[in-house]
Length: 555
Image (tube, rainbow, N blue to C red; front, side):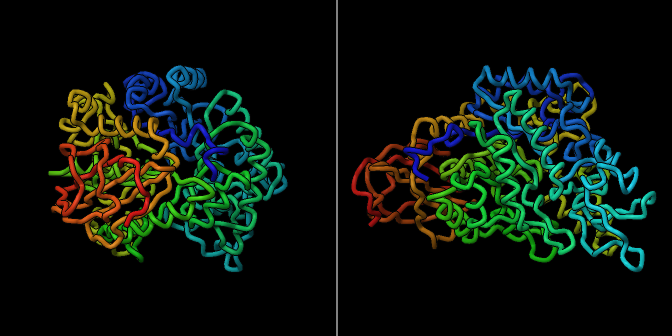
């Protein structure tokens, strides 16, 4: 990518993800809503973000908290009205903030009118909007594909004697993207939203729409990229928008297929390799592996260097499906503040567009509910029932949920130390984290040294220094077991990022070419006045230095 000719407004932007159900409840029913988001726009403007990625607010029976859509062109009543959605777009726009809608088009709800019609008869005009198969010879499912939420990926329909396909909940039937009418209807809906002035789309599990069901090829099917190119041409391609695809299966080479501007598909993708390297090879997310800095650095280097000349990286630690960053990669206890700032420094110094998940900017942590009935996530509940029934001990499954369950990210936003964390006047749909009396927005705004203000400064630095946006990435100290270091280079400018990833102290010596004067732009301890010779970093210490212009060789 040539920044001189291909600059985009979203290159120096920072995205803030809101999980509406848990962000702010304005009407006291215990569920976050659009009116609550509008109330907090000034807070987000103060933080400095440019886009709000809004997890789904479409009409939905909420089997999977809105990722099961029954009407793409209406708002779920618990979140508000279409008029309030339009008000949110307008009010955010006044603050130079755009809205990124969460587009879920791999599947719909089984209560969507298309599916209601599809199951009326085998010759219904909407039948082929979904994927149906005859039973196997023994009357069972057509094949042994397993849903990602547990159980068979096929659901028997008594009325027609056929099975329909679902990769997630049985209430989330997969759309048949081989049907041109499906494509046309989705494109029409997307343009309807774009005409309302949104800033783009986050595309849920978009790598699954090219699936080949009978061959059990779910990701990266042969039709995936042609479908995306057709979507681009029919909808957002001629507009100045951001589009990001959720692609668990992506490699750097595959990511280029999505995000190389010459291919006219998406702006960028989410890849999850830095997340999955902490999962057990057999048990997956339900049993964690210890964090390995060497593996993390290798993955970061691979993606930063792999997309250096074409495509664009999305940068994130957590989202609505993942555990809290400070609990997963930092220290949620003694060094919570230091490690949260360190993680922010690492991420915002990289090349790409950073994403901040609600509460990350105040260092919110995972929650440890002791009873399975306190959880609400369909994935956690389904897999808990399935695996404990198969003999997995309760304690083992609960430990997995504590570490990686999706509800870690979904406990209410902690606005204050008051009852229910200031999230609602009513009873919250899921319990608040008990530590809200210590970790909350009110306390963060009153503390000039809080995690919030560290994020605010990082966001301002990105706007002020093109080297943070367009500078080349060069890894440093790759073999160091405790330190993650790299530099960014643009023209004669060099930016050094140095971070200790652990609670112990770390010693290092920088290459001679980096031992020169410069300006410390941000740090999570007292600003350093030198980085020459032998250095000792304090626990989770992190800082950025804008080096004085000189010879760019590292030495």
